[in-house]
Image (cartoon, rainbow, N blue to C red; front, side, top):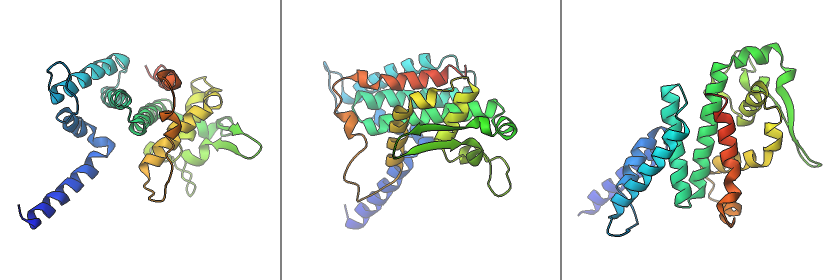
Length: 238
C-alpha cells in the first residue's frame, strides 16, 4: 500500500472516530463495538461474547425504562443506560459518567418541556432561586431565571441552550417536590457534572483525571448514588 493510500485511510479513520464520539451517533458506536472485542469465554468468539453481553445489558435497560411513555425519549434513555452499564462493566469510568449525565439531562429536558417551566419561573422568580451549596470559601447560588431566559430580551431560551445543568436540576427539584435534592446530592451531582465537562473539553496540559478518585474505590457500592439519582428523576416523568 502506498503512503498516499495510507494517508487517505488515516484521514477517513480520524473523521470516523470524531463522528462516533458524538452522542447522536451512539447507535453507530454500538455497531462498531458489537464487532470489536477482546474476550473469549468457553469457545465463544470475542465478537459473539461482546454481542451477548451488550444484548443482556440492553434488555436490562429496556426493563428499567419500560414505563416511559414518550417513544423518542424512551429510545434515547435505553441507549444511554445500556451504554452506561457497558462502560461500567469494562471499567471505563469516564464514559460511564458521561452516559449517566446524558440520561439525567435528557430526563430534565423532558420534564422542563412538559411542566410549564418558563411560565412558572416567570411568575415566581424568587421561588426558583436557591443556594445549593455553601462553605467558608465557596457558595453556589442558582437563579433559574438567569439561565432559562435570554438576558437581552427576556425571551425563553431553547431548552438545549440552557447552559446550566444545575439550573435544570433546581427547577426540577422544586417543581417535583424534591426541594432538598440538589443540596443533599450536591457532591454526587458535582462529580457527574465535573467528569462530563472534563471529557467534553480537551486540555493537553491536564495532568490529573477527575475519575482518579472513582477508580480507587474498592467496590461497586461507592456508585449506588448513581442509581438513586437516576431513579428519583425517572420516577417523576413516568
